[in-house]
Length: 185
Length: 256
Image (cartoon, rainbow over all chains, first blue to last red; front, side, top):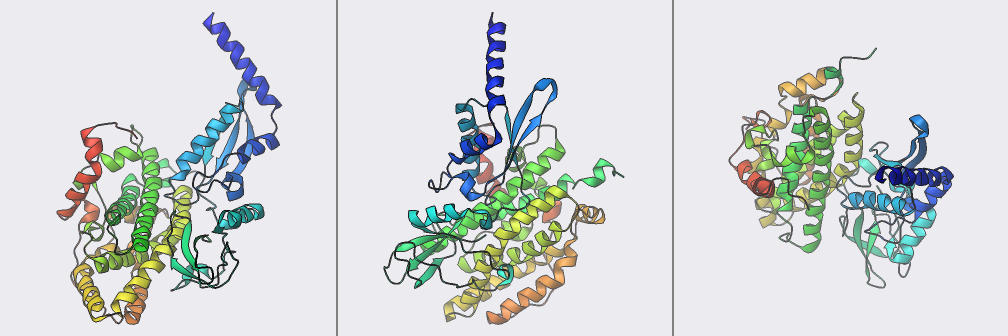
């Protein structure tokens, strides 16, 4: 009897999975947020690189979800992986595999325009476009970072390393507020 | 035509050497957590630790996948003994004062950036991808540590005295960076790894430039400490491992 029930359950799940389109998977993933910056989804950050349906034998297939880490040591990555898993399960999808790739290496260039806007509203200055000469400078590029609160360009860097790996610490010289800058990477 | 599997992949020793370097310096730097000279720099040095430990994880994971037989990133980091670690002696020395910490970070980041850039061009896809990712982080480490060496070297009388003392202390450990081991030669021959001797000239030229700006005198390239890659370490590594591995040794298989 147990066996019967099991196979019935499996059948049900398979049916649901066939109905789901790639666009719907993207939409589901849009609801997974970065645990450190909860206004950003993993789509805004550009962490999800690819979603594809892989055909298997005997009509069994699975969704292959390819993600890439932001920083090597980012402690949020394990959490993000778990959240993707939980969110897909909650949507009735269990035939999937999460695949992590390192190359091409993640860059803030992949952050969406709406993601940058959400960051600003949240009080974090969004990343600048990546300068071409970025890698070889002795001292940091001091192009002004606008204050996310008063939009002043009179700001200064307090520290190149901030509260998380992806942020630097700045202060506004006009409104005096300290703020995080999501550094370009 | 496909090559034999053993020559297509990096040897475990080579990956462990790269991983151990990142883990041991990451652990050393993490000792500043809560003890940094000011809050922002406490955060900076621990961020660098986190990057290094993250890099070591990718390298251990890759080594474990090649080694098989139940090896995991955790067993490689937590269950190997002193003689099995292949990191540079430079990286296991006590953290010292801020001058020692930032100078060592500079020496190593300057080396690591050259090594990772060379690795990115090599034939192994996974190792090249790890290098590509790590370069971006190392650029920050390099810039940050370089700024500090210049700031302290060309700063006050006291900061200059400390930085000169750090140079005297660390210099004889830098030669080991460029002494190739058997496993490095083997991986360089198959175009998977980098012979560190090929990085020496560029490293010296960069250090010379920074030292000039920092009003420091570059010592002569004399006798050098070595042995780390062969597992012959200073007494300091045992103490690091005692702390790093305690939980897994006392409570095997323990998880968060």
